[in-house]
Image 1: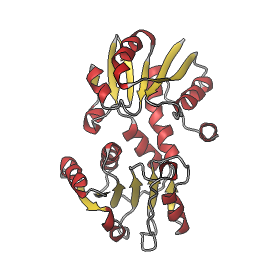
Image 2 (image 1 turned 30 degrees about the horizontal axis):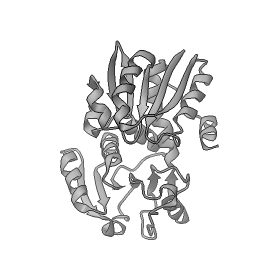
Image 3 (image 1 turned 120 degrees about the horizontal axis):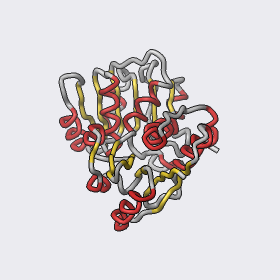
Image 4 (image 1 turned 90 degrees about the vertical axis):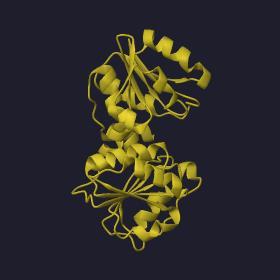
Length: 271
């Protein structure tokens, strides 16, 4: 039987098995996708066994950066992000990729029409922000603003990703509201709002009426950020979509089929 899995510590909360096993059943593939709790000091042993038993695996906290040292080859995207969330195994070698960039790009494009690429604003300057920056640059945004509580961290990222194609600026969270009138896409890349903790409270009164608001947090499905945006009738995108689309590439790597994110999958995962 063809096998893949997701590893992390802890791992109980992962929804990846629901996603991949749905596709395995849909496309009549004799395979199985599981989850495995792997402590930091067990990563080497896991990789050794994975080479014998698996087609590949997904990686979540706290292994996304540590797994890099075990990979024989990294995609350009994984190198730019500085983290790996998907590994496929071929000829006893590990190939690392980061499909979060694809997931972010697709969840925005699949949920919008005539996307205005004038100015994007990203909240947070952590690892997920790096993936967001690459995705938005790839999509062709003219300007990207990084808003973070620690502005020095945002400035460091803006300098790293600055090039001739896209203007990238850094601001503190206190200046966020002053930049909403020209922002066409607001994207939360932080964990603020996860499980209703450290909620983002933003006043969208003076926001661009055509703004799209996207949150990578999907627990709860409708975060406080999205609720506040909906009060002003702004178009919102839920974080669950990013999770679903980032899984597409991994499934294709392992099982040779590029799966479709459909309504039934979304319902099953949310259930």
